[in-house]
Image (cartoon, rainbow, N blue to C red; front, top):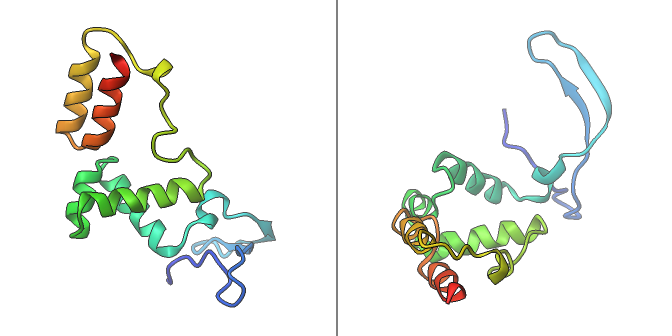
Length: 130
């Protein structure tokens, strides 16, 4: 099998699936099917998402697996978020959503230590609590 191609190599437009086949049964289903959010990503971005899922969303581990810096992994993640229409860096969490209880700072620091948030994001969240 070949890797999934999501865009027309000539025009760059998203592809549409027109035929599905059950490899064991030979059943064929024809129609016009969307690739959904997967269709918006390039093969390289899909590979990144696979690494991200295998590492349970830990960008520090993703960067290590890719042999890249954390910032490179973060930039690739931001690229994918943008393609999928998500909020850009700093738009996702507002100060109204930041917890203010006594455990919040500890939780943020634990996320930082686990590589789940960047230093900059942790500092932004802690500052927003003040």
